Length: 81
Image (cartoon, rainbow, N blue to C red; front, side, top):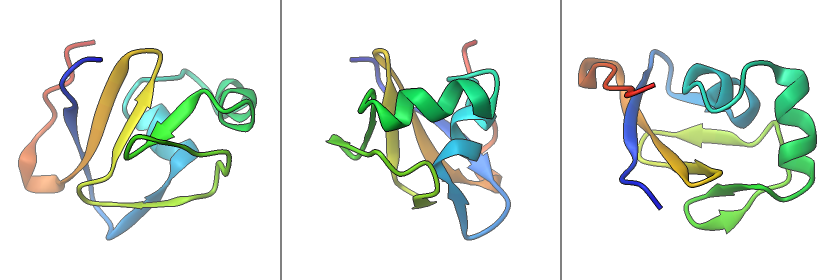
């Protein structure tokens, strides 16, 4: 598993489906839905099947060996992809 990349958000929280798109782990919400429902997404190392789960700063989302951490907007965007 890769080191998580920090992905900045503006608000206090973000829904899992939105974060997957923001972090470029998926291209669309339609792509995210079956992946989340099928148990392919981990949040903080645990399987998460709720696309609407609220993520807060510090949460780490993993999909297919790529990880992204919810970060403060001041952290910048260090996405390698």
